[in-house]
Image: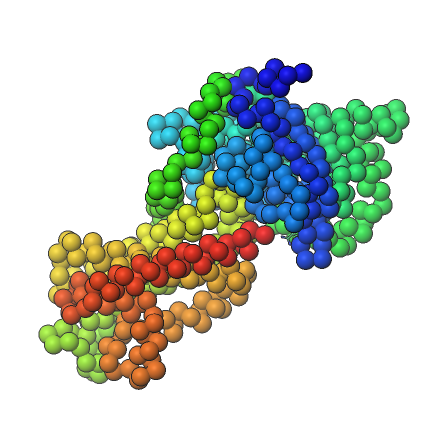
Length: 283
Length: 279
Ligand SMILES: Nc1ncnc2c1ncn2[C@@H]1O[C@H](COP(=O)(O)OP(=O)(O)OP(=O)(O)O)[C@@H](O)[C@H]1O
Ligand SMILES: [Mg+2]
């Protein structure tokens, strides 16, 4: 396989490099070893799912990848650019939806996206059109001039997707895009992601706690626990290992086991609190 | 929905080269500062209540404190200048200070609400992000300049209404607010929690105000306070404002020089501590 032919249409030349290559990543916070030797890579155009229980280290891994924090050791490169030495370039290539709700409630939907169009240095002549485009693609046409404080949780999340898309990223990073949403709003968000994928073939890295959703959407999955990757493969491969009729839920239980209760008692508290706060903001 | 049109453009090496993606620093910084300015203006437009409530305090200072102290004539003022006229540039600087100190609280709130995380994942260097925030504080504080100018006109205070001087007044207030917002964001980067910052903020705003020439001339202060005042950027801000509004003798070059250096140092300090907020 030549790298050239593996390129999805319209991909940047840098996609000849792997969208994500992560080698032996380690991150600690004080005494907590949040990420403990993680290596994985994502192929061009792939939808890659990073799964695992609360406190597994998914968000920490993503925060290294998006240049927000530095790893203690190991390296991540995005399309061949090291996240430490080429941080600004890497940021230009990524569209990032953080786990926490992050839209500015004091601004309108339009202004939120417009802010990011400016921060990603979109040429002045293209800004307005691009902002309207992504808002329309996320179904927020009618409400774009309303303050975000009047949005529903699902609308806020779709707005944040629009923000993440305004720079036409080559890699889309979604950290629990459906957190705190009702089943309908959740389905809606995934539907938008699926459409995007079909239209653009862009590479997606996502995390979620909903196994059925990961199963249908992800082409490849890595299951993390205690800062390490426990198993990795296509959903079919992972399920097949446990025998016929197994679901991704079973794989999760198998890999994580009963340790999940200990986890909630120790490390996960901070994230549970944050998640609750996010849920509160969602109302 | 079928009409999703967010596809990347056709493959062009230019579109993805670092040079196309990233403007040179001399365009990047002004562009980011302008962005945060515009966003701040939008926020002011959406919620004007703060604009009105913020106007109350300086009005009270001038009407109650100012009028009373004019009457007792306790404070010596330069010849030909009433105490009320002498006081109003000081109140201008003070109310800008109160707005700026709020910016550290805002940045902690933005961190807690996830906004900061996402801003920091955009191609915006830390220095540019802090500069943007600092000058956003400047924009907000210019509203106080307007309030006090209007009030002064009503109270028939004799200001120098030369437009060039008024522009200089706005510049001095913007620089002052930029510095004090950086001070506040620096403390935010140290204490990390809103409640603690509120405590520290309250503990330093009053000393900053009283250990300056905002209410009384430096020469009536005891020696140690004069020392503090000389190290307080607020004094230079007020000195510049008085010089431009009242024509009192002032060292404008020194004043603006000190303010500019203070802003640069403040931006650097706040930017250096920003990663602590991002952890
Ligand atoms: N800023 C931080 N300071 C201290 N500890 C942290 C910090 N961020 C994460 N941790 C700890 O690191 C571990 C991994 O956290 P991380 O947020 O990466 O987990 P996660 O897999 O994203 O979990 P969740 O599913 O709950 O989002 C947890 O034990 C967490 O408490
Ligand atoms: Mg997480």
